[in-house]
Image (tube, rainbow over all chains, first blue to last red; front, side, top):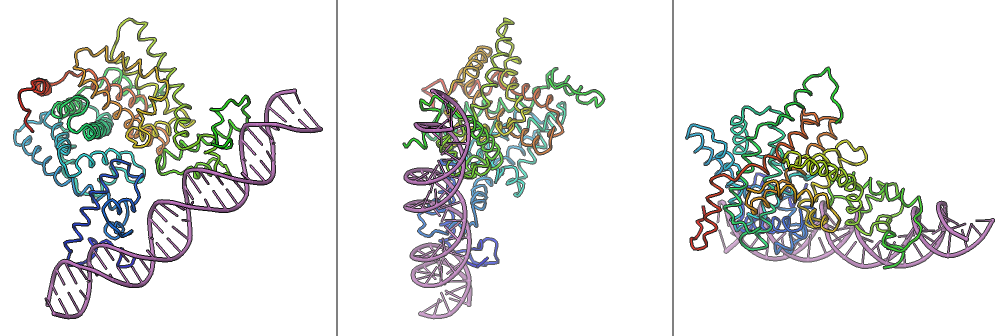
Length: 245
Length: 245
DNA sequence: GCCAGAGTAATACGTACGTATTATATATGT
DNA sequence: ACATATATAATACGTACGTATTACTCTGGC
């Protein structure tokens, strides 16, 4: 609670010194790299300090409070650009007048995929995101709930509107699963890209991205099968006990 | 290297005492529960010891060597049944004479989904698996490479044969992404199921499973889009430089 | 019933962590 | 140029970890 460890952002400080922002940038860059390589839980704050060239042991505490603060800083660094790009694409779609599902899927995938070419930690950002999906302490959905994310919300609404025939329960389940598909597909490709220094899986980037869009479209637009319809029908009759098979 | 910490399984010990197997079972059960709740890296071996009611501090070391040994024990506990079930389903499919893609997707999904009803750590097993996918120290693919997994290999071959029209690079990429879709979709549903004590997302289990099968089929069987075909075509002409858009 | 050995318990050592406290240096506003 | 608050450095404390070592207990085979 002392002044020395309070987050300078949260206070009423009128001035932000220039060397502080440089240190913050170096810490964030070191953290995202280490998190991507060794896992979020496999990195201590002291290791981040050392990797950032900080001889002090509590520089991370001073600037970000704790590990969650560092994670938020990493997300802040990258999501602004992603949000902007996503709004651009969605604006184009809405201006065109019709909600083409493939365009919406592109608005979902492309802003993320462009991070593959961001040399300032873009790939690490993608890998950290994939780790956060199922993380017990910092689940991605909760982290995003704490921040403004209008682009993703807008996209969610538009895609739901573009798939009016799918029952809502199924749509929700598919949307969640789509997150796993995208983030982990992207993170795997990102990892391999970093190791091979260019393409991965013998697939050029443009082909990979387009293929991911194809998969996203497929998951969203394929109608439920007759088997699923039958199960759905059966589950909606409360009288009949659903068998265990 | 002393005898006291050597894995009793790896030695030539003729006898295995009954209390030892009971302790091993309790340790594995405690470990899978803790791993699922707090994350693999968020649990120390000592915590596993305590949760297993072991007053000794090095019981885990004695029985499993290290954390990777515990993970292998968890996988051993569950994969046997999954493998057996998967071979059953694949036998039926091959006996029928035709490779129906939906049946193959069921052979992929159902053996895992049935773990949702296994009260002996089935849900924890699914959540641990999802964590292992992108784990830096114990990546799931490497762990599986160290063990016999003929059911999954057989399934991989058969599904690839059932999708002859898709270019191989795209197929490989989709197969990897499918892992993220399945394991994380399953783990999310498992987690919610455990919290709500029954169904999750207002979706009964049978509907959820059938919906996952639909998604898997969709990802596997949807042909590449004209956009992807164009990118693929362009990438196969080595003369022309691929633009960055 | 007894004994060798597997299994469990108790204890200790070195290391690294997060956190707190204090001191020094330096950039910014006046 | 100076004073002040901010930023960085240095150091210390308590805790928990993995590991190793030693001693005790009890099972299982004879």
